[in-house]
Image (tube, rainbow, N blue to C red):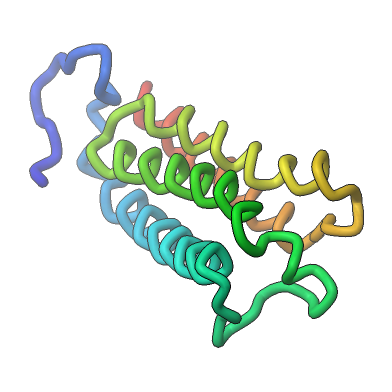
Length: 143
C-alpha cells in the first residue's frame, strides 16, 4: 500500500503532511495488534469447537466460561478489532474508532456477564497502551 501523498485527502483518510514520518511505527503497531487478534481468534474458535487450546491463557477455572456458544461474542468483538486495525493500516480514521469500540467491548463484556472474577490488570494495561498509542498517532497525523 502506498501512503497517500496528495495535499488534500477525502474525509475517510487521515490528512497530514506527516503521513510519511509515522507509517513505519503505525504499521509495526498494526502488525502487533493483528498478531494478538489472530492469536485470540484461534483461542476463541478452538473453545467454540470444544477443543482445549494448546496454549491456554485462561486460569483453569475460567476456561469453561468461554467454551461453546459463549465464545461467539468474543469472536465477534475480536473480529471487529482486527477490522479496525486493517482500516488503520489503510490510514482510515474510522479504523481507530472501530478498534476502540471493539477493545472496549472485549474488556467489558466478560466483566458485565461473568463478574469481576475475570478482571485482568495486564489486559487493561495493554489495551490502554494500544488505544493511547493509536490515538496519539491519529492526533499527530491529523495535524
